[in-house]
Length: 304
Ligand code: G1P
Image (cartoon, rainbow, N blue to C red; front, side):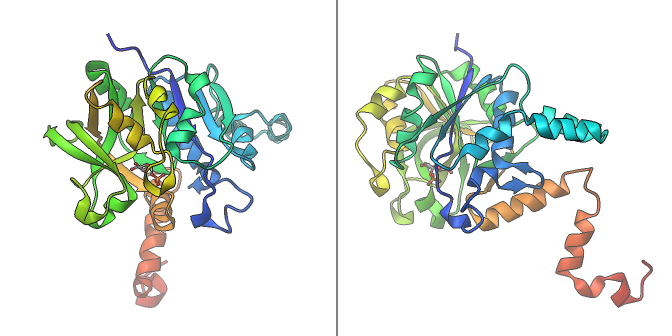
């Protein structure tokens, strides 16, 4: 029987340079998609998969992330005094009871593998999830919960994967793919992994997106890990070293992924999530208006 996933690691030490100046004083994981910061979606996704212990790998100037999940008694009192019960409920939903949060610092930006390694003493000797909050997935069943179900049958290491345009392989960990169930929710055998290969060198166009279920043996590999692509200690290289020793599978998740580490991806996510919010009517009309001003009622002579 596979052991359940009770812990998730969130590497949140990145500088967010692509969003400067917005991220000068605000961590990029605090950028909102509609009205919730990215980290909030990531933690909620972990929780939906049964995770009870969230481990943030942070850096300096990231205290806003911890503050977000901490109670703000002054704010609660102010809302209570004003009778704002709906707002109070929304605050209470941020950090549900029973969820534990720990933080550990990554002292220097030495790569994703290094960031995960920093959490070793908090994870201990059990399987765990890694969630990259930049990768936001819109899905009926949250991505990590889909993975947890499949993992219960496969065990080992499971990586969320999706096809990307060949021109983009240099942005991702890419699979050397074997047997492929080739359907949403299906598994792909991982024969090898390459971090950020050039399009002409990529063994496939199947890329890892930021959801992983990993076995604790990864830490042994990470301890001795040599720098890989970009001179950084890569998680992809460490997972590749486990192939043959443990099951390593790709998982074709169902849903749409937005790269919120990129301005265009983040903007698109905001539009997509806003369109999906019944409490935000009129977004579709506003968009139509922006894209086709000639169709506005005042320009066509139509009624208001
Ligand atoms: C990281 C991983 C890469 C993965 C990607 C998913 O890259 O190293 O293998 O495909 O996340 O978003 P980064 O985006 O941190 O450069």
